[in-house]
Image 1 (tube, rainbow, N blue to C red):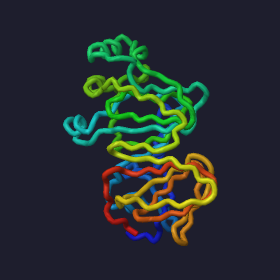
Image 2 (cartoon, rainbow, N blue to C red):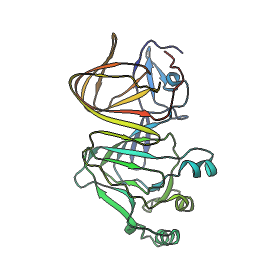
Image 3 (tube, rainbow, N blue to C red):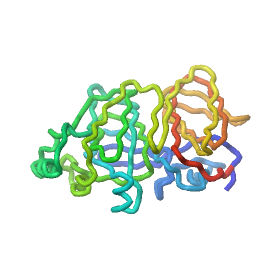
Image 4 (cartoon, helix red, strand yellow):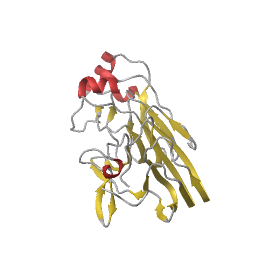
Length: 284
């Protein structure tokens, strides 16, 4: 398919959960793709990228606490699940007063200690819990025990995998994966970066938070890949040549490779793109 535009306003795949809702704002995952409209017809994002996009970007709104979970490394996931693992990061979009997250363990515990604590329903005392506020940032590498608690909305950037091992589920009647969780768990503790306002990168992705007040220009990426722009707050306009797209809080814009973008308005935006990746030539 060919498209004349370079800027695409994406619509999410919405995934309702027992604890709240996820919106997969950039996804080429099977049966869970985000999409855009072309001549009023929905078109999956993969029609633009011509291949699986190497990131999954979500917003997660938690009314209740998520399971205590852990994701495997690439090595473990490939050996046991025939897929890649998952590292991710969180940017806190909204948080109720005194809202908390779990982002690690309180100490260095053996497999046997953790297994017994789960069996005896006292694992909660082993979990590192900390308060978070709007604007905080955390990196959650594979192997980190974590959970989002109720009253929080996050922007999550991750490897494109839905592989999750539940270590503990607050006595809800859902499947847990204790043995696999204990295979991959580490003692890493992710501590929030307060009022994040800069750049973060890991082996899989890079993010850049920017504030626009007036007019500015965004240079194209050098690695020939599509970039996502998530609007954190405010509203404005993205333009490329004669093409203009209005954005507001919660919008996700997908920009073609080699695109110089002019922006105007008053808004905060998270620029997100994969590392060490060169996309196929875009279908435009």
